[in-house]
Length: 323
Image (cartoon, rainbow, N blue to C red; front, top):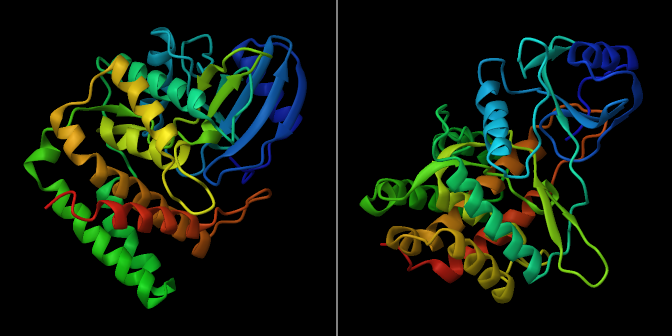
């Protein structure tokens, strides 16, 4: 979330009028993230988040927006896109595709404990199950084909040791993706970016944290559910300082997920490989954003070194896990 395209109060009010949400009460750009323009919008009818999509097209966006609507109707706490009088949930602001969703309660937990990880694991499993009958299909646009295309673009910016790691891990992941075990993995809509800052909690004194929502579905796609799990484990259940796994949080997440949906044999076999895949995906994307940045009013690229450390930790620990 950043500000690439300026939105005026007049622009915001025009959209609110289209959606029947009353007068504008407040408009504020959101800092953080690197993909889209985001604003908090307060109206007579509530609090919202406005997103202008900087990379995704009008043709691609219905998959994401209708997935959120689908999950919301099945009781998963996700932002529900606002519709106009004709029922359309994809809009246009300043020539860009746009959506307005309800703002979730609570706040992100950036220093999660086992209870937070368990809550995320359980809800992720419920989300996967709720998405089984979603009829639209779009691949994970940041999946293996994108890694293969983007690695040569970032390679010239790397030190020799980093380039060797990127090349060897990419070869390994192509090998895994061609295996029978990988073909057997359960698939469906995945969030693919469910980091700590994309989940909301409410915390009352003396009570366990309550998960109030998943948001920012704009990297979602149809992929293996195991990849979604691995992305979460690589963020929620590691030590940020060195990228090493936290065993207690890791176990809490997987136990809670498994209580809602048991992992298959293929998933248990390939979890180590997918942990490496998740780290590789975000190392490549952060290298790309860091070395080939776009202009944005509030843009701060993420440190690519973080996921290099995570990948090295995963690859060192799990090197013999798949042959």
